[in-house]
Amino acid sequence: MNNEKLIITDMGGDTEHKGSNDSILCLGIESSCDETSAAIVDDNKNILAHIIYSQIPEHQQYGGVVPELAARAHILAIDEVIKLTLERAGKTIDDIDVVAATAGPGLIGGVLVGWMTATGISNATHKPLIAVNHLEGHALVPRLKATSASDSATSIDVEFPYLLMLASGGHCQILLVRGVGKYELIGQTLDDSAGEAFDKIAKMLGLGYPGGPIVDKRAQMGDKKRFHFPRPLCDKTGCDFSFSGIKTAARMLLDKTDKSRIDEQFINDFCASFQAAVVDCITNRLQNALHDERVKKTNPKTLVVAGGVAKNSAIRNAMEKLAADFNMQFAAPPMNLCTDNGAMIAWAGIENYKAGKTVKEPIAPRPRWPLTEL
Ligand code: KG4
Ligand code: ZN
Image (tube, rainbow, N blue to C red):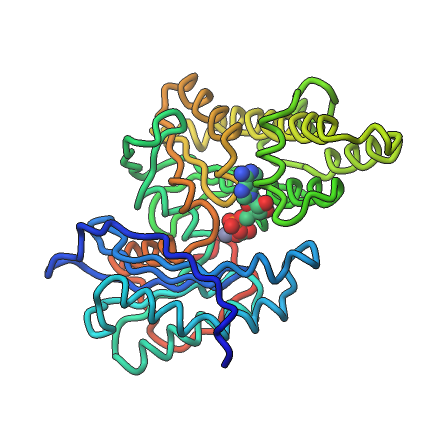
């Protein structure tokens, strides 16, 4: 196969740590969307190596991920990504104790590539195999590494139970995380995910894909008071989200605006105003969640954000403030562990391995796999 076009990013690792002899080493593989990634993580929270091959340039011209192209790109990349990860960690496959891979939810063609690769490695080496739920990867990665919004230099320990805002391209949920495999759904979106809303706004404005990082950057240069977007459900009780109304309002505003008025400042203000609406919705829904009887009874000490949208600094800052209002600590993964990556899968592999959740017989990957069905 032709690997010449692979653009691979070495995410680095905790280089001073090469895994002590008594630590558990997990090789984690992620391939559920448009990133082929592998990492080696130990149970002392060290990332020995972490490689990500991003397919973004391949999908950019289509304005979103094309599943068939993604699956083929994963096939082309995966062997090289795993080989490089082992090399960077200074390890061979014999040194690995546990093999973990995403077994869903996600684009099934891509999930199959990573899952079958992990199954093959496990069968050939007789190492234990862990089927990681991709969402659990996002949900548990703050326990590998996390910081607050205002101080990214100091690391925070995230203990169970915690209240989690999980916001990615495919999901938007508030969850009470009681332990490995123990999730209670407190609220979720009734239509689009937060990431999807960012992506669609960017597409409307012709800003490219993925939209979240671009809208975030534009918003930082804009006036959030210039346009008013709705805050769906915010006058209602409950913890569910709805973002499609914001998207429709944005579409209508653009349609009635004279094209000659859409200059750089208009776009920046538009992004800032849209982002402010999303931040208000997230804050309002989390406020209700923090008053929810189930949450109050469980008394989580930490408010956590995870998933690709957790990269958004306005959301991080608003959640940090909310946590302070409720006397809680706030935690978010470092920026490079928010979007899809192999380290979160390796870490979820370690946590599941310790909980005794190894794969005992062949399983089929699942395109849909809610966290409440672990
Ligand atoms: O978790 P993730 O990498 O993939 C899924 O599991 O879906 O999340 C990707 C999503 C995309 O919708 C992307 O636009 C969004 O995360 N995203 C952001 C930011 N960076 C990535 N959204 C808002 N602000 C950001 N800075
Ligand atoms: Zn994800």
